[in-house]
Image (cartoon, rainbow, N blue to C red; front, side, top):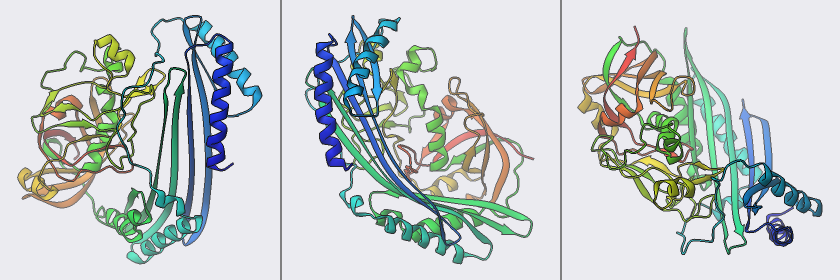
Length: 448
């Protein structure tokens, strides 16, 4: 079924569902339609190893029955599904035990404009994807005798979200992207290291084969000969990708839902200084070409750019309508469905110094480039973390040798307060959560 016919059928199906809901005494009612299409190819050793095509679709009906909201979902647009949806809403509403539920509301007065859908990607064929993956693989194979290419993946994806209700809400947004990544193994005698590089964007030019391959090769080769560092508290420059990983792990502390449930130490801290004065944390759902950009959230509320932290001061937590009502304020447009709250494009606002300037100012310490074990080694409530790490020892303001088999430990809340400077190299590495590099007063390093 092509996209045009699918959208026409969804529209007709939605109207019939609303009519059936009204006849069954379900009012108001809301329909959310989520669809995605993806195509990926994987190449290894100059050969096409695998390709995957995925087409997912889900329609969810919410409605008020007997004074409570029930929910039901389907993946089929047929007559039988209409009856099942109506029955499912009525049955789920009967078992709801709380009056604290997401409301169904009319549309906001205005919605922002968002652009993160590229028409150019519609013309990218399967052969284009395969050819790009082959070029990356071939470039890696010829890069260095010490390198063995791993796998190379090229993929495209497209997502559509539609929200309609019987109170006049009628919204739809589509986004797409292309990404390519490669891995490689570098060996030199008994020494071995792995490398990885990912690029993404909205055209084939955004994922240049040489940039992916050369970045992967450099990542692997520069890790050869890595040693360990002596233990102790050291000043650290956290590279952009590693800082984004930390921010992604702890972003739940900025959720008003978590705060109201006692799962964030930022509850009631609005207006207080919680970070260094050089830290401004932004959530921007209207960012052009942002992976998390959308003009409305899962509740149909208009989204907006906001500073969560501004010059170190906590301005707001992220809210849906229910948490905002509890706090006596307006929603920030961060509803993610099922009562949850999540960021859109979340990032630390970049500064003016490049990485070399940050390292030079630090003088001696650790240039932290990778962290792992984020799920097991981080406490998302207390902010404590102890993570396996890699990076480079810095002497005289320069990275002098690779280091591995070290552990870095600290606390996310304290880390925000200890930021000394913010770099200019803002990066979103295939994620809507990004960061520039940041210089931190100190972290505890366990090495030799």
